[in-house]
Length: 520
Image (cartoon, rainbow, N blue to C red; front, side, top):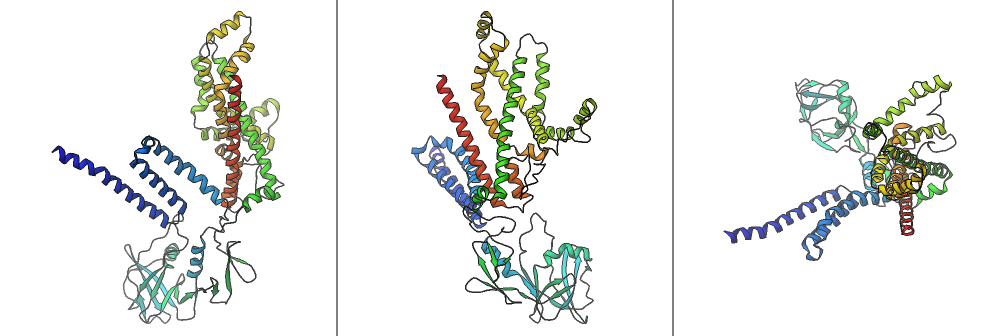
């Protein structure tokens, strides 16, 4: 019995490992077939390393670390590599497809050819649909088999519907095969109907050419051996241009849709050399650094001040004060931001109503650049100080009370205690947190997007850019909003931003390490 059990255990793990390996390879094959070569390659490398680590005695210690390392590789390193790769391409709304898919798109284009046309009605019986074609004289009709028709959702609609072929049979014009759908339903099902080619008994083929008509169609383009496409109607020749990412006419005119090509450092050069991009980029970079730095300064300063005050032993009701001051951190950030957006409203916000009643002024918080930046700093300080306060209170409790007693004996006051004892002992352990807060606010997209959306805009720039935009929101506008969804340019800016954040973090960590070494 024991030998049988031992034999089973000896074969179970190899069988499970083999099954997992085969399942992983199958998954990699699916991803590769979908055209995601980078993702497929990364998964393949991770699977190969997993097999190596978990089967080799030399890497026994790495078996516990490998899941975390693999997660970092897939969810951190891979997106960074993908973003950097996109930055070297012309990927945009005009160049979404690969070259092969763009060519296939042109080759699938059709035009209405000369020949007999047929009246058309879509008949429905329950969930079933059939196409009835009728000659212009109405003497003869044709019915298709039952079809599977469904209106594609916009999110899931493919670039081109899959082509289908059905044969129609002759039938009486008044044959009862269902009720004809109204024009509204025909419009809804038009994309699915256009995917069908109906072959008639005489061998002729017709396709949908109008909401009430089927007719003969022919391929619009024909591909030559040299890769050019010939328009069958006009005889015009389209030649692929792998620098522009478009098929072009003989006169050099681009014919959409375009395709993705590698354009090298074009986007990176555009950021730093094209005045249209360089000028707003430098302005926004300066504001981004100021925004992140001032936010950390104000939030940390206010948090430390409140922590020192709440640590005063003689203060009564400290628990109540701590709870009230911690509430801003307990409320979800996006709710607080939207509440402040209402409070700062120029016309109906409570803040302007109070200022108007007291001083007779109503600041234009959302249209004046300086006031908009001030508002952003106020809101972000409000959101950030509670965490600094709580952390600092914990650090203050770790300071030995003997230091303050000795300071009191020496005759030192509260300010001396703060600058000579509390600040030096609190600031050092707080430094890594301040660096992390700076990096977080450097990319604080949510605050800018919900509060001002980057507005008010610069009036002297050629590309859409706002005075309160930070680099990440500026990138988002280029990629998804105002300037035609240029994903390649946005990826290049993201790469530059990533390099800047990495450099600033390295400098901060380096400075922190030097400070610690000097302190020793």
